Image (cartoon, rainbow, N blue to C red):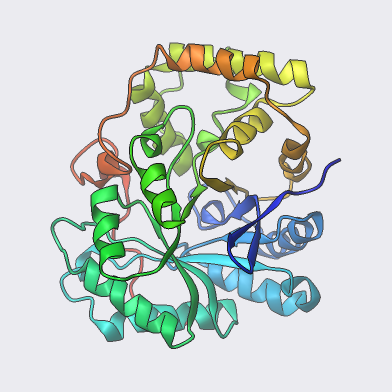
Length: 349
């Protein structure tokens, strides 16, 4: 086994190219055994996946990581934690410096650190509430004060991100949704980010688990999934071209996987890691059940023939409209209406 690939996101700051995602631990993805989840974190770090992704509004996840750090201090020395700051929609008009610094301070307490490794910033309505740029400058001030090592962004489009960059906010990374069924980052975002030296930390690369043999040859799922990820990514599949075309893509992945002695999920992850400008892919995990499979992606090498087989299906797909996250930013649309906009009420914890 090759081991987990690493990359320098910025000079002197190395991350694993598979990042352990924390959204699945926040509820809405099945029952979580908190004690076991913390033990699983140790298994990930020991296996070489040392970079974790979480957020201020992922209920209980920052605290879990903080408790992991306390329970496994030697492993914690190897850890990089990427959290997020997502002010509530209801606070966009009144998100002053005290509110923003309060969220940062709370993340520091929860994670049990003196400085956040990477704080990824999102603002629900950058066009309707343009004070997001001023808030970005506040984050820069907190970085200068030593509370934040690096600033990243997530789910902005290029026009919105450009305003942050032009205001002097130092952006180290961008976290977009990116997979063969969502190629929006390839329109403008990747080129723009590479222009000032930022790379992508991709989520949605496994489409909430739809990139799996478990869905190959299965009838189109209907109704309530009982799983927030699948609800979200089924909408993307619909826009991509529908269930029948997605089955063609899964079949292409299955053929590639068979040739390489791999799994569909490994092929999907390898595809993402091979894209230009991509530093890492985030894999949501409620347990260590797929840990060995995730690490095995680094033993998979896609050939030009493999890429052509995937592209042959993509050529028949429908391009998702707009720039990154434009569909999801419409609160009344199919994608935006399933979001939870006010989960970050600032409380002492």
